[in-house]
Length: 582
Image (cartoon, rainbow, N blue to C red; front, side):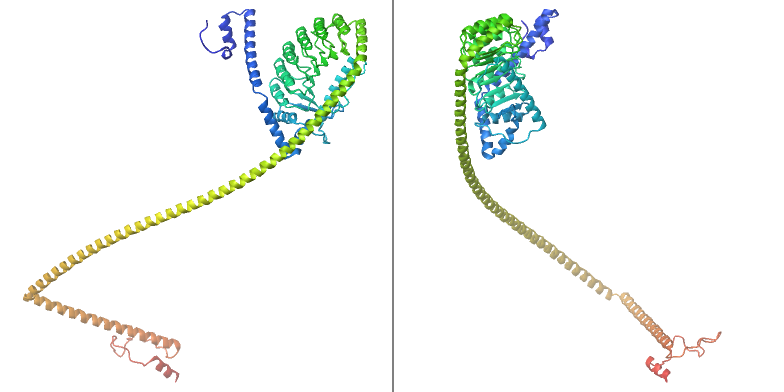
């Protein structure tokens, strides 16, 4: 056995090949390798599908409905603007809705739309060019389906619902295995849509179980179109097994779903038990063949509810048509069978048409009554849903008012509580601030006291130091004075010292006399300069005649006056001025 290691899902292709086949490279080994890889991928996919399936529908439905009701209660116009864009004017239908999945918002809108009890009325809003093109394509597709149904009727008049224009129909595009679970979860709340069109999508065999569960759980959808999906025999088997006991589905379209004999046998087993299905379309499944038609005929021998059977282009040929001819001799409920594109002998076709005409004559009266009953039932259901919707909106409005009052009361209580908390916080903050301020003041006072004590200690120390220095200075002065007195007394007793003192006194007197003489000379010079300045001023003013310069070669002092002697007095300047004027 191989050594323990990672599981198969953790191994690569080369690892699987080497683990199982060693160095073999035969075609059988390679084929087995591919089959193992496909099995691993399928197992992983099945696990993911099962996980999604187990998520349940109730919680998601409650969330979708509560979100929708909240939106409708607050502002209904927002709801209309959000979902009205998916309404399409197709073939005169007043309630045909088409959604193309992809963006997450579209799935949310689908949940809102499916949760409505009553669909909103159509608005007069003009469609965009893209919406118009989509509506035209849908109208063409619907018209082609009507033509096929009319051709299958063979010209026989089939009673129609009187309110067929009002029947709500939903078409979903862009559906694949990644979103089919979410789509079915969203539609579990559906109470308005009767026809669900999932044609031409990418739904495979793994998507059919959740679709069948939706039909059984919802009970509102009467028409299901799965044409154009790759369901294959396996997918039809899962669908048929779950629809055997479904009592709400009336029409099922499985055209071009790639089924063959086995798929036909699964549907035959379902028809043997189902007692509500009235229309089954299997067009384009060219592998059904004669044996598939034989299986369907055997099952329909005991079925008295199926009215419309479409088997165009199913490859049944004349043998298969003969099986249906034998069936029609026993089954009186079938009134429409489409066999175009099967290369059936004309004689057999004529016999089948004759029998269908007879069945139609016997069936038409009862069919009209059934159609009228269904219409009446739909009208009653609509009225009931309207009443329920009105009651729900009223309850929502009352609940909203109560919640608003409660919220307002809670907000007021919360505001009062916050105000009290803020007031208390302010008081606590103020108390803390006061305590902090008091503590700070106490610390400042303590610091001031410490500083004052330190200052006093410093001053006392300085004063003590100063007193000590003064004491020492006094002692030093006293010592010096005493020494000077002793020295003076000693010198005074010495004759030489007395002579020196006398000589010093004389020197001082001579210096004083010299200083007095110099001061007198300086004063005389200043007086002379002052007098000369006054004389120059008088001459300049014209009060005195100018002084003539002395002749060249003669002495400037001819009279022999002492140059240091003061000049002769000329009187005061005022007096000299008066004399000059006279």
